[in-house]
Length: 128
Image (cartoon, rainbow, N blue to C red; front, side, top):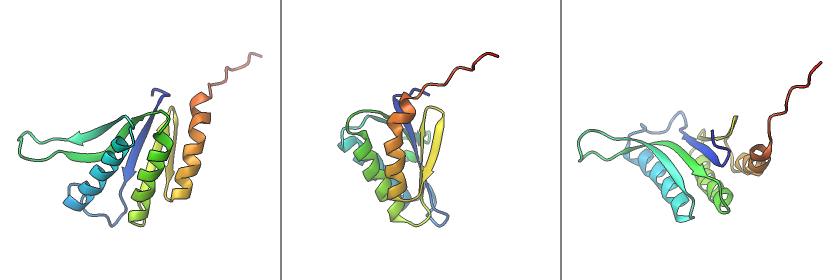
């Protein structure tokens, strides 16, 4: 994966409504909209039916381009997501490193590590 991007997946709680339900979809679209309102470039995964009348279903997966406003926007979006319902999680993936957060505090800790993860390079194996 491109080290200048973060994969964000918003994961449901066990008692969340159906993923294609109106309330759940509204929460995912609100998260998507919030990122864009903060100037964050994000690409979202969606499922579309063949007919034009059925709205797209947001899958809760976004690829976010790193930039100056990304950390505060992600913290806001993920914080709202995990606080809205007990058991919700957010998964962040940067390069080969993947971690999940269940609380706003865990989200903040993960986001603080992003520059370190992004800038780390694999160490070469030493010979005998």
